[in-house]
Length: 186
Image (cartoon, rainbow, N blue to C red):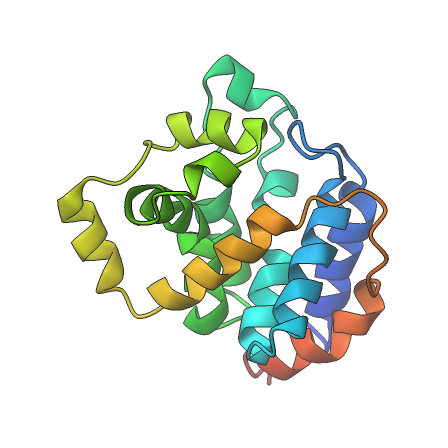
């Protein structure tokens, strides 16, 4: 694949399929991903974390399941699908953060007393399918993971990134970041 072609492919996927509804939220998948990346950037996150924020929900565009899967009790495993898909182009600083963003929600539900009350109804619905709040032994395992802290930051931006019509930079703004953190394609 030519230099940058993988980034164009990812941006095309987000642009083409990202306009779909975002699982009961008031924004599209694309709006959600752009807001998440914007919040990461505003927090002065590392470039790999900004990339993970932008790409964290790309698995929703890959699994081919309908927007209302949670209402049918189905977990599409979008985080695992996204991490596996992205691993051909990005290192673990991106892919593991993406893979852990659902576990981070479960973690926060167990460790932050007010967190679950701030979740949207759609996020609470998916939480139950994703395993619910972590058990104490799961919390310890999660905290020991190298990307756990970064995934918790991503999760907090993820929860915030549901603001209708928020003006944020578009996809092309993130092209240099994605190129910067990509694996060498040579």
